[in-house]
Image (cartoon, rainbow, N blue to C red; front, top):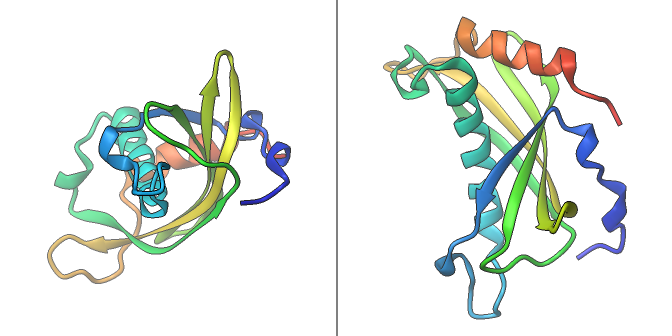
Length: 152
């Protein structure tokens, strides 16, 4: 855990996607298990893409697969914490998107940073799994987020 909890500002993210913790997210140490943070990232990014495009992204001819991911833990989480996952675009390429992410714990009206992360989606043909261009629906949504987000 880091001592620099306050360096992550929710205002630096164009999207704050709500995610709840579940009873079974806690491990034997009484906090959310480290692998669950990655599930929060994955859930938030994909739920946001579905919501903003209006398309079930699983049905597109190209799908985003995770090529790289990382997480820096800042604060413990535990059930029944309510969370928001901050989503920002670090890089939009022709075949991949790199997201800058953060997990915030809701504390009344405040959002307390709990983790930061990075997530790279590479788009591949759903059948052949060969790298392809990002589908236009996804590209448009990500480009719009990139254009409107605040940079820290």
